[in-house]
Image (tube, rainbow, N blue to C red; front, side):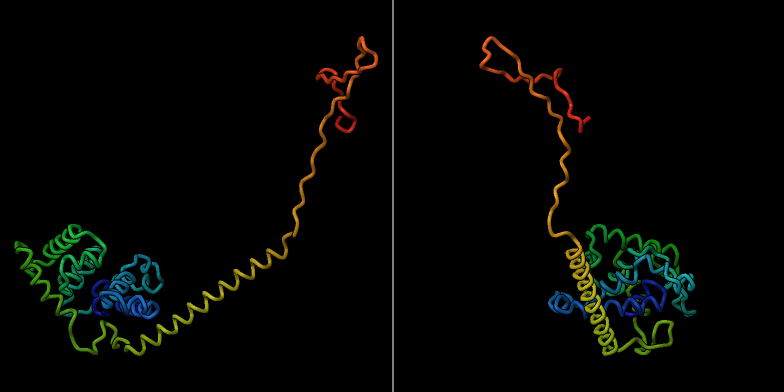
Amino acid sequence: MTRQAYLLTGRPRLARRAVRRGFHLAWQRWPEVAVAPDPAGWVRTAVYDHALRPWHRLLPEERAAGRPTLPDDADRALRQALTALPAPYRRVLLLHDGLGLGLSATAAEVEASTRATAGRLTHARDLLAARLPELGLAGQPPARQGAILRDQLAALLTGPADDGPATGEPPPTGAQVRAGGERSARRTTRAAFGLTGLFALVTLSVAVAAPDHYAAPPVPPVAKAPATRHAGPDTNRSVHRTHPNQARLLPEVR
């Protein structure tokens, strides 16, 4: 897995970090991974996703590293050509021609349609054929191109077990990765409990500081028109009428 991430990125530190991240996620979500149809594919997808995220180039150590540093060996040209491909092309080429996944399985893992996956694979092979004429990909049928690339990529993905890619260090053991995953899971759990407690404390503080009753806003005074008495033919009966022209404002309203 470390070699696969190294072929995707050309950066040994990033490859090792991506592998650790993928296995840590698998350990944290083990109930989900354990019942997955392909647990190895689940971890591989997590590793690839982390390795190909564009924000890695913003990290100080990646900016200081500059362009990928590749070993000076017979496969240097192929490694450079692979890392020069667009990230989706690299991923499809590695899964299909490097690991031998079928086209439909590759499409499912990259979450794309079969037609789009086939197009990426074709473009990746064409770019490699143009940049590395010595591979003999140009003019060959797709099946022959796949066979040539399988042989070439197999040489990059295999080798001595203790040969860490361009780091001089072997990959971490399973026990080390599991211990790191457990520590990461404990830190995540503690952070989640801490945030929950902080949210509950803030909610309680707001509830205590808020008033316990509702005070209605004051109602402004309303202008009233005085009642006017009109004398009619019947002096025993009075009629009160209100007319806009006869209305007077109260002193406090004026």
